[in-house]
Length: 264
Image (cartoon, rainbow, N blue to C red):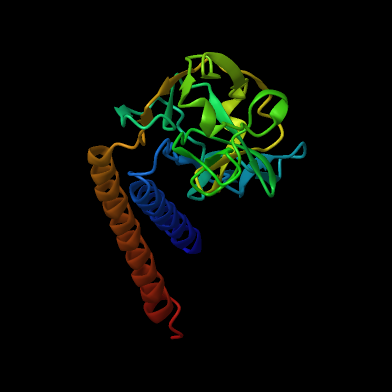
């Protein structure tokens, strides 16, 4: 009985995690370059159940004796649990803005390299601006890195900047820098850190990017609102089903305590 309560409770917790994950993705549906978080679920550890019994047997002298045996009944599951919450790096739709400092990346394996107080981070959010020091920065003020991992400086007296598909930045007909675009051999090792930034957890294996830059455009979130509504309904029904199982298990336990275990 108690195992049934735990199994149903674990299912309800997973359903709650599913709803929380959809809500977080939904809250960022307007965030530029946002990549939805997936929820991977696995069964909780199971164990084998054996039927312990005593079978009669014949001894050499003809007398009966009990032989203890334990045939396997089968595996017993203990519920479900969240396995991982990786990012989905599929391409989001690209929207033209006309702003020369809005940059979109076409291709899934490419990221802008950003200098933050906590170290180098990566993002698909290409909504940039120029700060008081003429540096190309994110909307949070973190410098966008160029060649040799140095901030990109654009001089206003040279006129507007032109940025090529490979990230080459030109002013007044001359090349002034190039965006440090980073690709990764293992995208699953990138994890969200907040402020639309991604952290290399240590096994992402950075290398050359395969994405191209589109100036005057932004990549939007790859989250599907219609699919989110279906997922929310699924999570709600899943939670309700496990809730009913918990109530049934609790009622059965109460009946056992009240009736079967009642002293004569």
